Amino acid sequence: MSYPYRALLIFGAPGSGKGTQGQVLGQLPGFFHCACGDVFRALDKNSDLGKKSAEYASKGQLVPDDLTVDLWKNQIQTWIAKEEYNPEKEILILDGIPRNVEQAKIMQGLVDVLGVVHLSCPNRDELVERMSKRAIKQNRMDDADPDVIWHRIKTYEEETRPILEFYNSDIVLDINATQAPLKVLADITVSIHELLNK
Image (cartoon, rainbow, N blue to C red):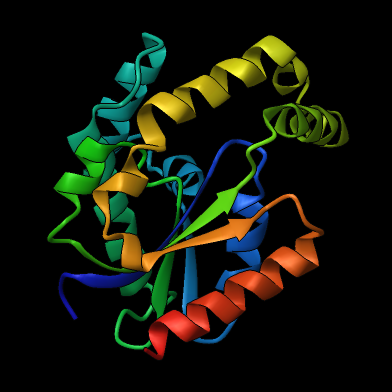
């Protein structure tokens, strides 16, 4: 199968539980979790794309949108070639991409977005507390700094959140992310089931 790949996007501010919920959903038959962070980590440092990515990172710059999408496409094709992901049978759970409206535009012909799972957590103080705890638990002390966390939340509000307006509101699923993780998962699966069976 070539483009577009069927996909569900999982969105939310830092600390809203995207990675956790995305990983669990990816274990369900018929779904494949794709975390953008994993795509960058899996990159062959000696490939052309790997070298370009490293060049931006070494200067402390963000990888440009078109290059980010190229890296993603490359990784998806690798997974297909290795028979880890079957686009005929599996729906992609995209976590961390698209990260802004420009990336969403570039990806329009590449993915058929069936739904957007929005993990809503209006209480930003709770997000900061969650991320601080997670950073200590995972020994990521640079992530425990409240200033760093607030900066990440601000970046999300300015760059990533506008994506929700880019897609048709009919396919945006608002999920209360402040509940217990199991309840959040239950709400997500019920909402996805209803959306896909309309």
